[in-house]
Image (tube, rainbow over all chains, first blue to last red; front, side, top):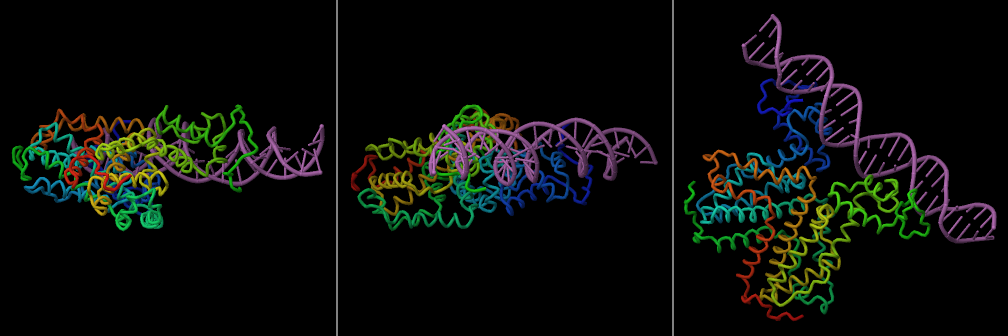
Length: 240
Length: 240
DNA sequence: CCTCTTGCGTCAATGCTGTTGACATAAGGG
DNA sequence: CCCTTATGTCAACAGCATTGACGCAAGAGG
């Protein structure tokens, strides 16, 4: 069997039920399936049924299911970063990247649970990596350092976003129970055994909120402090 | 079928191959399977084969496979923080907390990947939160700030640890493909379209490594910079 | 010591899952 | 208009979790 996943398709044939398949349509249907019925609903058989085609037809478009998952992940990235143009302030640009990625994951929490820990190797991700490393190099970091710190930055962003998405993907009951936990369980503790928690008692409900922005801001603060071009403005040393 | 998972067992019968099953033995065998043959080796069939019993016998001990995974995860949690005593240096103490959590997750990635986004509300977690907030208050932070920053810290640690565990939990093929991705795909890019990636080409293989320590160190750096008691030593203002 | 109950290991079956090789049909270039 | 071949379909395989029925034997009661 030669390459089942050709680059371009000139001979598009409708399926028995009349649908014209395409990579985009499959990815969108997969995203919809996951959104409606949870991540476990993404199987070639269900996808085939939802699309009105034989399950094996999908292998004409994706090498295997993992390939499909990566395509879905890359679509989320692309949607999140669509229209993004970094300005002059590299810190602000990285901050917006962080917020956009998080928003993208929260828009598809159940798909994010599946996709958030993967390297997609596809166009949208590559463009995002290019932009991020360029921003850090414009801050004066050497290429090696820029790569390391970009990785630390984007891993923090993706990890937090995945956590927030996983929380958002929980059933309402579990989600609210988790939120109440910080108020209920942590309120009646032995002051002797837990002095710090007792002192901070009134502040604990805030634990239910996401620490995403605090974490990102702290990280960017440390990066700004270490940046050779210390003035938060892009040096344009690397151009564009 | 009445409760297949009784609390106590008085009538223990050896399996056909002579093994006496028990919850502990099953959990240990599961951990061993994962350790020896990778996370994908944990299936009721393989576990049955490894134990020398019919796969369905496991359902006498665990309600379903998720129940089994949680039982395994439960054993992991206690191990990670066992014997931890924070010293005088609050930054070093938080750093060790981070490393311990990550090590505990990485030791048993598949179980960790499943359990890592939940609030346990149990003793070990509460003690860790107490210790962490106490450390930040000893650095001079107000209770409200200490709570916020502890959340940012522990969320970063848990999220990164979950990411690393999720990666380690991938099937071998996908894991190796993800690692190769940075070397293969990102090497032959159009220098015009991707100047930063081209400049950093030689450094990209490092992207396959974990950014955990960089991220934690950057975060602790920012916290130390913001700490009112700026000398990295605990003030003992909060006691303990 | 025998008998009866029932816990628990075993077997077989169900219905999922991904994946692939062979086949048929129609699209569209020459 | 015909021929190549891309692409949708079909059937089959192997592996997965799970469960109901079955029967052996462990251990309690007499």
